[in-house]
Length: 226
Image 1 (cartoon, rainbow, N blue to C red):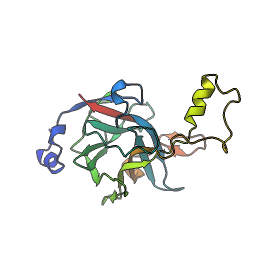
Image 2: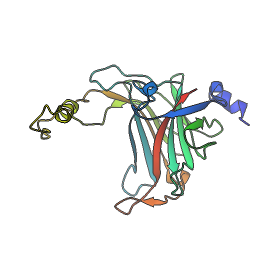
Image 3: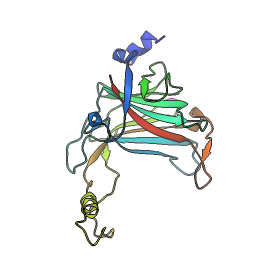
Image 4: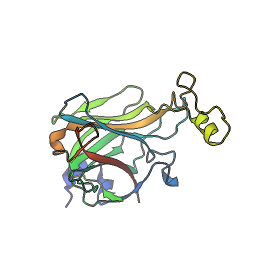
């Protein structure tokens, strides 16, 4: 049963029992040009040997330079999925959903269901932060969880027009060297969600990367209210 007092305290009564359906980046027409459209996902240590992990999700409304900052869609739940036993099924999730100018985070906790559908885990609040605009605003909880949500410079360096020319057979010289390439997305913004938390909240990693460093198996989904 959901705890009504907690739901009201977080101003999320409309989320009770809501089921949301996942969508992939660009693949689903309903996600294009909205913050259900996943641009990038990063998971990393904030410093070598740190006992924390940072999860950063970039959602984008548009990818053309000099456009105004977008906004988060209150009908979109972003879900970071973490596999702790190596079976490629999420054992823990961290959720983020916006309401009234703030981003609310939940988890990390076992989901009520796995796969393509999700339910907002209002019984497991992680914290919340004001959604930034031109000035970055971060929040640190008593559990040393750091939160951010808002626009950031698109981190993707890519000469998109030269790429199209190459695959279209219109660039016999091929790709340009770095000094001559153009960063098509320079000046473009993504809507970013970032959470840093102690690894103790995630359990012991069950996988190692090519360098032999323990890592979590993790992926991100966006889910649209149905």
